[in-house]
Length: 180
Image (cartoon, rainbow, N blue to C red):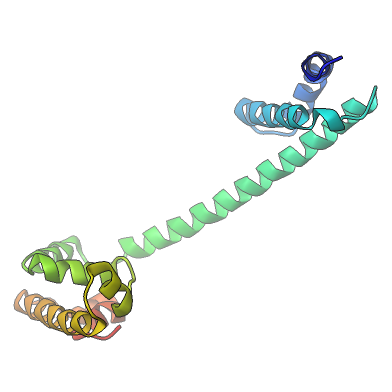
């Protein structure tokens, strides 16, 4: 008997029992379908390792059990990540009023495109001066000088808009003052 026929017989013989097994252990039909599909995919990949006779059914239950455990671990990771993102978004929502954001955005856009790019590479991308030098194809010294000047121009723009940098936290003050 070839692998395709072996798999077909295995599938037809054990599909109903495995479906009932995963449905009792999942919260949704989609999760059950995913677990069942992954179980039989594993069976297909490892068709030559299947134990003979009735042991194959128990082997499939073991595979399904591990698949379900992996699904639970994945769900836990997603839940933890979602909670962390909610916390971060809550902190962002507690920031300065929107009209200040508009003024900061306007001050930033009054800078030259080169200044904006330098400041964005530092603030948004988190790059260091040597990394920016590699990105921009210039020396580290040139980047440090340009960055210093861009920060001073941003500080002047923010000051002329009447914005108090201390309201934006130490990172904004350091950025505008030229500290990293």
